[in-house]
Amino acid sequence: MSRIAAAIHCTAEDRKELERLSKSRPDDISLLDAKKLDAPRIFSSAQVTDSYLLALACTHGGKLATFDRRLVMDAVRGGANGLHLIG
Image 1 (cartoon, helix red, strand yellow):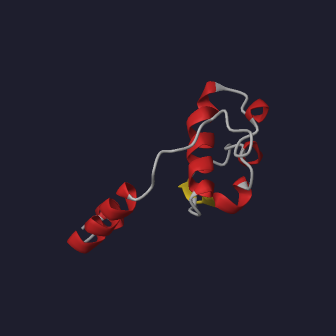
Image 2 (cartoon, rainbow, N blue to C red):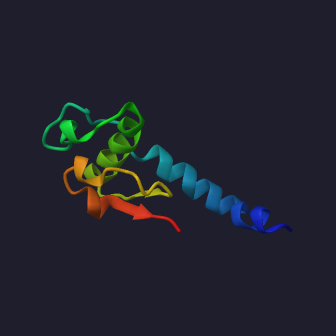
């Protein structure tokens, strides 16, 4: 098995758990909610999705795992606590 295949290999139980987790996170926040986001800190359209996902994770006590070190975490209230940088 190649290193890439080994890295993405997961068992049926792992897939079921990932599916369960993905369904358990509601998509229920607004980018316009000043209690969650500091919209003026979002400088480009490229940052909108990442900021929204980080705010969503923070709202629900989760973490956003990302490789993106350019994410503006201070655009999200408590963003530093909800961010997990990979690698």
